[in-house]
Length: 455
Image (tube, rainbow, N blue to C red; front, side, top):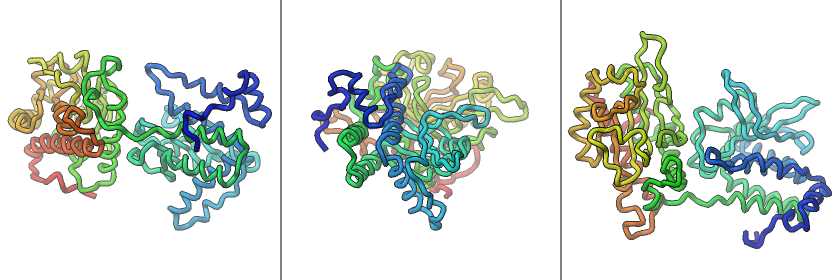
């Protein structure tokens, strides 16, 4: 493939945009590519790259002769390789029997869900959803997203395409990366020898799919970034996605690792709450300056109508940036020192109406005493409910990222290594889990070792 700087879109090289669009029309291609892509303009609230990619992919599937049929055959080959009985994947297809749609919505459990791409099979004037496709670059899946799509659109199969295999935190019939799409596109070009215009389009598509690898966290990333709404650089957001996607896979697979879901179950037992821990917690978008995993979801934000039920707690683990001190830190007495920048945190959240009720619990008082005695020895700062004027927080355990990643930042005289940073990050999470769990175990009367995880 030619270097990217030598490549120009064929429409741009045309004398006028009108002539460029005529080139599309003369070659039997739809002229709505630019209209489709223009719907995804960037804004402070929206990163349009995933939608932009989906619209571009759809347009190529619909306009490059044979590409749609080739792609569906590759998807069916993946499924066939996973099934003992491959007869159900023997589907007769052609470009004329396939239909590709994007950003389609359906109602599921009373709410609208939007699927990136649907691939439909047309049989005797009837349409059957063959694939629901979810496309991810740096973002994480929402809770049960793949299952919801399959149910909402009644699809035969599900497809998940991501930047990294680490993002495969939910099971789909086909789980691949954009690198696989690059490879498949190469195969299509070699096998089908498309005309120059189609080849040029497909090769530019491949260039667009080279997103690059996840980058190590730099010294500047762990400081508050005043140019960002939440003070968190995009590089740090991506790295945390990478770290927590790996951790979340460990939770789901039940590998022999100290487990956040185990801690959530211990908290549930100690405080006698009726909210179930999430078996597949999803990485949250940035909210309240935090990005990470909500182990009980967001149910703690709402009062429970049934007075006979125990009011829920929230358990969050991830990073916290509070550059403007608008929420967490300035409401502490004494005030928390944030000079070291962004923190790794464990937060016990509570609906504000019930905070005083929880503070009286023996379970909380024992946990508080344990963390007061032990957290500083491990380099953690424990912020108790009494220190916080914020009525939504029951406890915060924090450690600055500069301390978590000590020895693995550019300021340490070496080139940062992402895998080594991930190991440090996970070790710190394990340390925090064990600190909290040791206090919880006093309450539930068990000395169970967290390193033994039930399968």
